[in-house]
View 1 (spheres, rainbow, N blue to C red):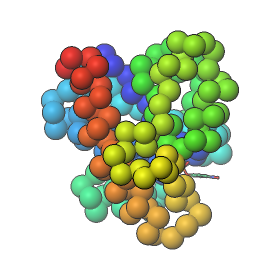
View 2: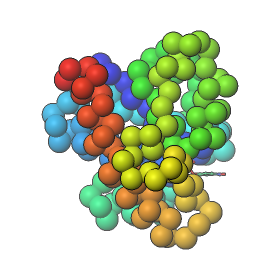
View 3: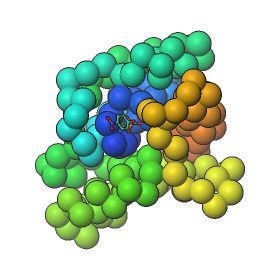
View 4: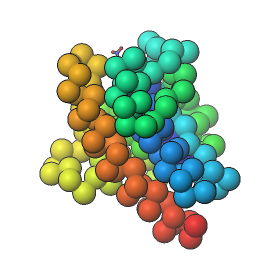
Length: 159
Ligand code: 4NP
């Protein structure tokens, strides 16, 4: 089983959306028994909470149901996870600081490094303190990037 984990700051907006969109793609391709998908936050403020209502609304109108509960990424998670996708550069930095080994660091990637339209901006913008439009923008980025990540995994693992 290949374990994928999306990581943002609070685990209530960006990474739950990425988890939901990616899970839906994996299901569409019938790969649920090969790829397991999770998400986590580097922060602890929202542990146990469902995704932000605004993120759930945006997901829902695009046919994606979010059902995660926020959790904080733990050092131990490096051991069980094959691919860790940081939603922005500060999340990546926090994960790098937590990583116990070179082997662990090699599991880390920036989510938008797979976005063919990143135009030099490798951060999925944090929508938490902004308006509704920010959530739609996050959806667009996540929706076009998840298929590239799945392709990367399939190519690498010969799925
Ligand atoms: P996320 O958004 O990292 O995409 O889940 C945030 C949610 C909450 C906070 C920051 C970002 N916060 O500071 O509480």
